[in-house]
Length: 157
Image (cartoon, rainbow, N blue to C red; front, top):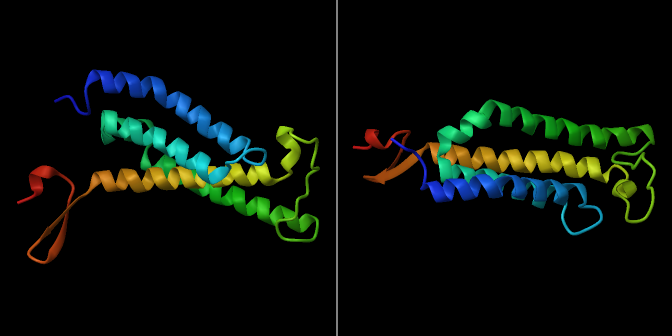
């Protein structure tokens, strides 16, 4: 049985998804210069995976990015954010900017803010991906004043 939507939707989502990911990455990297940053960039990146999830189904998406890999990326984002925060102790204060501020309107003008944006983008993107994929894996049925969880539609009585 062919999972997912029609071939038109699959083709368009396959074409559009890389551009959405690139846009999300640019929002993360230029968040200290323009409106944006780690949170909106992570949301944009996870939206590209949601588009692919809707077009192809969860099996195809989990074959590309498993729950284990996304959990590791989430942990890397958390450790990266913690290391940026603790790196400030080199200068004597928590979250102190230890890097040069650079030139105005340059990519490296934000000091350690760009590393914080990358870490937050990783955490937000993988968290939303994990939440949406887990919601798509479970069917919740409310009957007889009780909530029941099912993994397959055939198991529902």
